[in-house]
Length: 480
Ligand SMILES: [Zn+2]
Image (tube, rainbow, N blue to C red; front, side, top):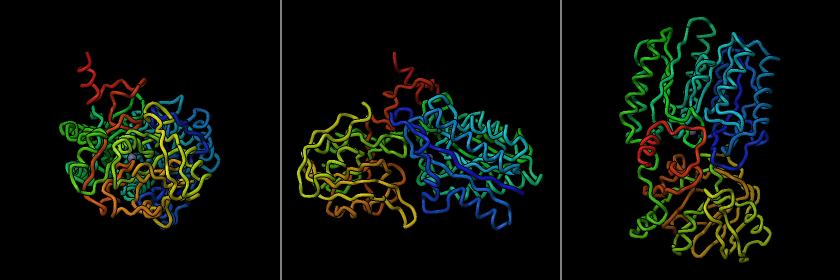
């Protein structure tokens, strides 16, 4: 038995003007992201334990941003497929993909990649692990033999799903399993945090369906609303043993159940604009975390939006801190001037109108670190480049030269910011940070801003997506 494994992925935000290029794809960028084994490491361990010949090609992921430049995507795709041709034949091809990658000339990179892979290896079992935020297409399902997506958001079950996929791929390659896959469209775009109710019940429903005799796997891909593609939306993938009807019926039944609960899973359901968020916070003494989720880089947003920071500075809130703000120029100027200096800075708001206006401020430079790594664990961190701790009015702000996701409160202590002394902790963050910041306070306020990964879908200039799923269709009906 010969097994090939590789990764080629990113989560494309069509409204981010930062192009994704070949050099942005790095080997194992997100492998083990949540502190456990990632998919490719898991497959390698399983193959090694069973004495199976394992070929590991680069496991390339890029930090989410705008669409991949078409020529770069084709070069990466062709290099991957060429490797399969040169080193093959393989009985099993395992791919660690996302499911929401777009190129400037391709609406469905995973479907396209799998079509090329199928041509190169017509007899191989092609097995794919997808992110839960995939916009799954018929083409992906048609070209692959097996697709399993993460069930959890945050995605701490990558290794479990990778294990299931490997087992099913092995049985298929050995001829003891004939997998039938089905895809069902929910007809909505949903956001389902799975560590809390009511999202937990949805995961339990998926697991219950897997106990139906003959059903091997169920995946609910929530979709990614900022990938402007006709395939945008929440979908179900099922795998059944040799029974296409069972796979189809199970997928349809899950899709129906999820659709009936759609009202509870609308993005931004409890989010408020910056002014209202600050009103709420200033009315109480409770330490509060403001999550400015519309500008998270893991959602492909640039990370330089100023909507919330502007409001905090204008209202001269005290006992507040804010991180991170991506601004290469400002970080460089702070580094050049050095700690103890005061600079007039034009801050943030540079990449597009979705990032808001730049802020003209007087900033006191407190500290500057070079080659800073935002570390989640001793072996895993994100490069943040030069990071400057500046103070604007009474707000402590961290400005970075590189885009990175803020996930962990330790970054504030690294720059001498004591969260015990802060009442307002504003972060560009969503689900992962909510878990890591939970020990700081249990009071979170989701802040809605018109940014590139925000919940103001009515402001996003879709061209390819037909707004034909809930709740977009309702917005269309409401518009005269
Ligand atoms: Zn995801």
